[in-house]
Picture (tube, rainbow, N blue to C red):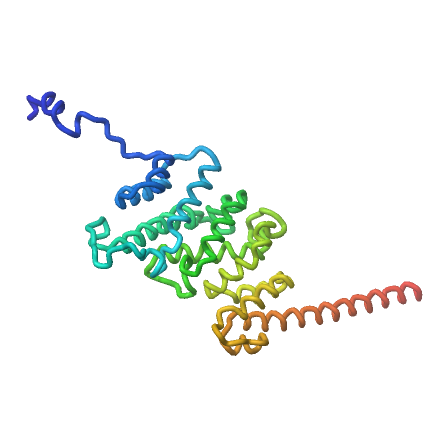
Length: 301
């Protein structure tokens, strides 16, 4: 072949064209949004986070699109459409599967890419902000979209830790850390981004409370009880009476007995806040007594 190399190259189907393995973000977006070829969508999803972007708006756009495609990735019913042929199967990169299975797997692919490209904390230094912090700190729209995605139970991992599922562990850690930032003082966390949680975190506390409930981490509020507000307590009360079916509950105690984790945490918080207020009054009384003693001693001197 070596003697005929030039001739072979001219005729070979691979040698007479320039092959590019990269896709621009605009190309990825076009394929993800419009293609009906599952293999093309998967390829675009896998290339999307490697594609160069040049503006903050493109970063936001990319995260938004992946969240929208990943929505319902863990849902049983979402991707089964009435027009699907029940027993029709296709040979795909995932093996043999139905149309609804393929849709679900594409959504799961988008979710996996989010876990690796957005949710994963690649910062290894202790007392340093997570690698993803700058995105939600600088862009409230990205935080809002993540909260939109996480408001659906099927989109977030439950309180059970999946030791063998790396992506679910990443998503769990991401959401738990994100939720804590609605109450934790950033300076106390060692990050140096302010003396209190950011306003767009605080205003979304009810959504974060719901996320903590899904994660099985509502006890965090008990740990940070001094930062809990009346608005937080009201949100807990509302959630305590939700999801009880036809059973009509009249009190928080009834909701707690019925199994509501929100009600149980609310009861503990009420006790802690009541005792905290009592101790503050005692401390204030002691302070005033000491001030009075000092004034009397000054007069007698």
